[in-house]
Image 1 (tube, rainbow, N blue to C red):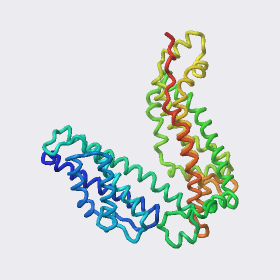
Image 2: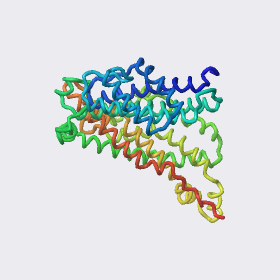
Image 3: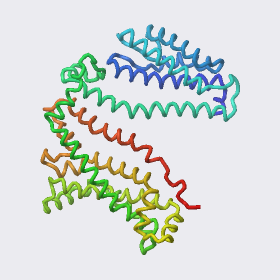
Image 4: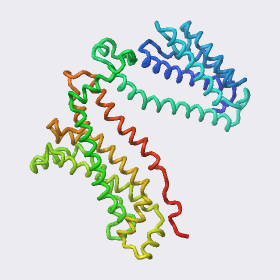
Length: 403
């Protein structure tokens, strides 16, 4: 490793690695966005990454480097010799790809190689440059694995059957169709009863959250604050139920619900969903309750409050961030649950959203309807998470202990 601790080696090496990472990113992004032929080139990354790394170690200025590299990559893309190889693509697509390559390589590499000398590097300088490059790779990689599936799903939902049959790998869209792009969503609501599915999933999820909190709050408080025989064993075994795979319980649940007449009913679904969510809610809340200052509750007891009043007036207000977090997590579990809904529900009028999406997985139903249903199931959860994020991180204990 010590043989790499030279600016004239570290710079070109990081230049090649980052050039190839960005070439893959730009090629995939441009292919998806335009439907035209872009592909990364390892040879091109070597040819352009080595001199780029050397140049930026020697003399790096962000704006100038990005501008020069954008011009260089545009010329290279035009000649078909850059890190991103193109087929018969439009001039606009070629220019956009060149700008992304130039700016995307110039600016990050300036940050990674900042203050590196051409000669020998200290261990700190070398590790700092490598860590910055790995962090950048992590941002690109994890963003890609999150964004690409959702992008493919969204773009597919905006196409018609003829476009999908013509080129299934073309994920560009024709904006000239206007509101016609959303035809699949309109048909889901009007012809496939997806409005009812969404409403059913919503109130089942809300009921699951309420029932879960009703049992989890006193259970978690008892484990965290009270002293009773078997407390330690109960605390350690809470998650054992959650660790049992639901597929193992599927057949017994199906038989029991069929015998009791609860199969194919919303009541049965509302009864069984909390079984899967209460253990994890207990585990999450007991840890939070233990972290609350016990002096606050003791002060309430000394002021004449009962234990239930202490929980209601002191513990729960201080636990709002944890309750919001648990509620969101439980809601997501109930909203996305598929196995039990698929096993217990046969009547289309009682389908949850996930069960309704499964009914679209048929050769008789166009693929874009399945993708549109998946988008409908995903967007509300994303919006809910973003809306409640501040409540999940906001602390409410400041000033709670009387001086």
